[in-house]
Image (cartoon, rainbow, N blue to C red; front, side):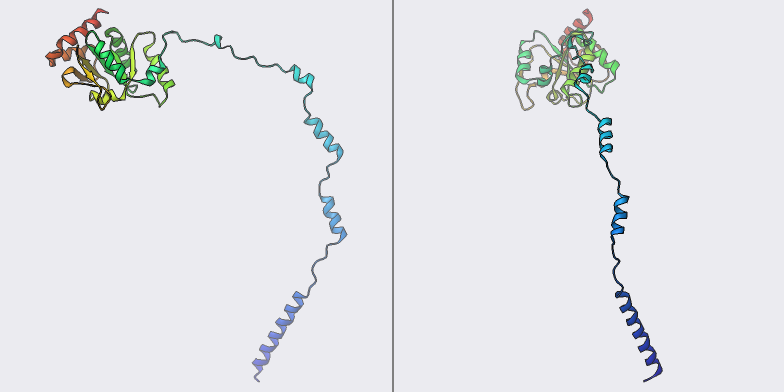
Length: 247
């Protein structure tokens, strides 16, 4: 056997002996003193501590509760009221431009009618001007839909817009398709005696029954334009113009 073999054998024997000694060490022993030391390190809640906590967080007595003022219920009759008393018909707004009701209205109409298609996205000044002119000419304002999808917000916005003026306002998205309205404001003059009938869009008027003008103009300008450019509607536009100017 070579010397190196003896050296390797000696190193291996030493490692085995070291491992045996390491695993042969006994586990640490937990004595009573260790347990007592750990117990002393834990906080102790005494009866006095519990009593002090009860005093700091005690329930109020019946006498103390009786001294607490009870808030009065709000007086609904004392709330501020709008300056105008003109009501908004929420049911009519929700119903929009009902086909059968509108058909009957057109058939009963004694004279031409005017629809002004508007949007709350229009400038406030332009909207206010058209509301005033619609009131004078007995025209109807037509909206495509609700403000933020809310009937309450729409009613409040309409009330703010028209104030005490008597103006008919209808929500009728189908009317925008019926009269091919693609922008606001648009002015539709429905001639006297125009016949309407139910159709795929709810209510239809024949193409020779109405004239339309679109653009950021006044109602007076739109009616004058119809008189010049559509002779068949000159009489109807003139009738509405006289209503407008007589106010």
